[in-house]
Image 1 (cartoon, rainbow, N blue to C red):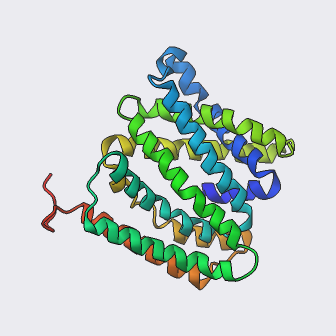
Image 2: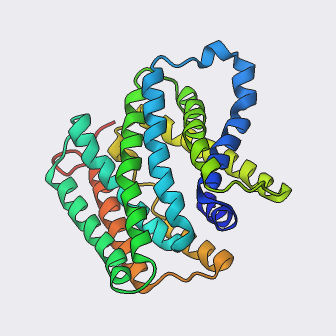
Amino acid sequence: MLNTLMRGMALQLSPFQTQFLRYLMGLVVLAPLVLRGGLASWRPRNIGGQFTRGAVHTFGLALWFLAIPHITLADTTAIGFTTPIFIMLGAWLVFREPMRWERWLAALIGFGGVLIVVAPQLSGAGGGGWSLLMLASSPIFAASFLITKALTRYERPTVIVVWQSITVAVCSLPLALVSGWQWPSALQWAVFLLCGMLGSAGHYCLTRSFSIADISATQSVKFLDLVWASALGWLVFGDWPSRWTLAGGAVICASTLWIARRETRGPGGGRAGR
């Protein structure tokens, strides 16, 4: 739902303005929570880490918002399935989470699925370059989520979510101003407010999951997104996913669901004890 609304706004306004207003409204939504708790309670322990995370996330968002008006929601979702693969690889490098052969195999199969989605577009006209731009955002988002995982060691999830809205809004404002600002209508403001609510709730749940589980194990629950993205893309924008998108998305989804199933079992193949 959030991606559907964001694509609709990016088709009406500048992508960078859409990016800025999404996070500004996220901050507006969180403002009552911040004021009720007192500003001092929201002071981060690692302000540098918060702004690093915000800058990295802003960079990934800039690529994502540039590409989203030009490719279908189904393609966006299928390509976005690669972010958990980059997270898995990054968690191995940064946090020394175990990288067994199953994870390597899942990563290879997942990238094969990406080729199924992207390659036909590269040989045709129009969307190939935008698909690559969308793909380039995936490892950047993965880096942002890895920084989030590190921050959860000494920051509350709510603090991280609030500071994400602050830092991304601050970093996105210059891009919004130079990209041709257009004052939103009342309806557009309402849509951005809804996006702020949905996005802030989603980021809180994701950050909370990072604080209580291995980051690799938290990435397998989003793969029904392709079904919803295909349906909403068709209903709202008249975009029907190609057979290559569905096939590639299914391959990526299957590889990640398979490794998620393996993650719930012990090294010997039996289900891990509680």
